[in-house]
Amino acid sequence: MKSIKGLTLIEIVFALFIFVVAVLGAVALQRTTLQSTYEARAVKRATAILENKIEQIRALPSQVNDLCQTGESTAGFTLDCTPTPCTLESDGTVQCNSSVSKPDLYRIELSISGPGLRQTITAMTYVSAGD
Image 1 (spheres, helix red, strand yellow):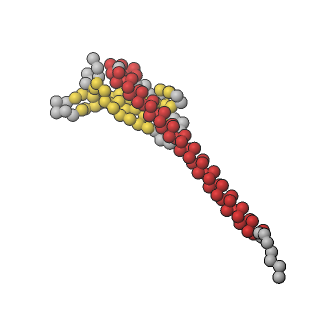
Image 2 (spheres, helix red, strand yellow):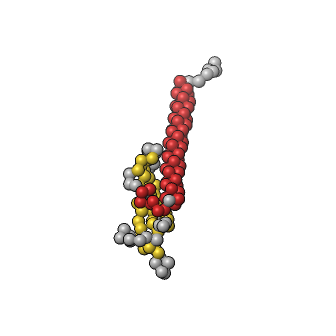
Image 3 (cartoon, helix red, strand yellow):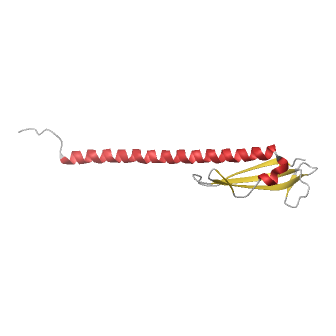
């Protein structure tokens, strides 16, 4: 009897199938990695915009109402800023509502949304009302 050398068609098809599955898995992994990188960069940019706005407000607390605007567009992101006047009570608590006429400080609520963000990023801080 002669021995047959080489591979059968079924063996070649099976090896090719395993190779294709491995390549498709690597492509899917690369796509997921790129998407995650894009989202991380968007979060980083949005956070930097929020931090910048907070620093502007802290530098010029007397102009908080001018610096806080709803629907401000920055680098493709939409930034909403809401100042709420607050008073500092004698017991150390802070009372915030829009009817405070002479505020001691402001509660600033910021939110940002835009491309690459799955959800809105929010931040809140308090700043002195200034003089």
